[in-house]
Image 1 (cartoon, rainbow, N blue to C red):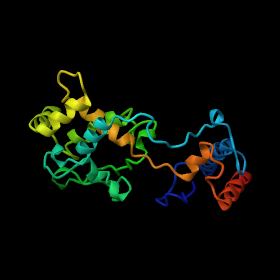
Image 2 (image 1 turned 90 degrees about the vertical axis):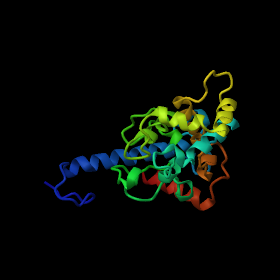
Image 3 (image 1 turned 60 degrees about the vertical axis):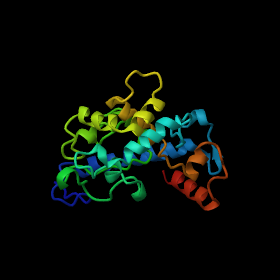
Length: 231
């Protein structure tokens, strides 16, 4: 057996050949993705042929829904203690995370999971590290009821708090017009998810993928050519 040069934790179960094969596959995937974005340095491939889609803000925004989601995202009263909000573990001033190995939740409990960034998270194929939530709307409902995280006993307790707030009653009615009872737990998830879908960080690379051949500098295009040529 070979001692793993990556994990350094002892004898790796994978052979050197197996690890090498995985690394080659990963490198090939990155190379193919970049190659598809560029036919040659400075030449952008047609958008309909591009497997990597550029990051972009949502095409349609319901401002009332987004503002409600923002209020919920930053509201520590959605936690049992009244001190923890979504932003506690996914702090927007710290890159959308808390920058610690595992997050601290209700009653100062140390959770078992590292909090991923919320930035661009709506573009993930699934949510949570194990992929158990299909989208950010579903994911947003989980931590509030998790006894280790925000610690609310059930969704009914969350709704009691919201219905006691005239501001929330007004905001939910405006965000979900026509609904007989707009303050529902599913709508809490929808509102927070709508806010999170706007937390995207487009870069010059995204503009380049979208067709702007001037988005990258000369040195960056040279680097891209070197990356593609290296395979």
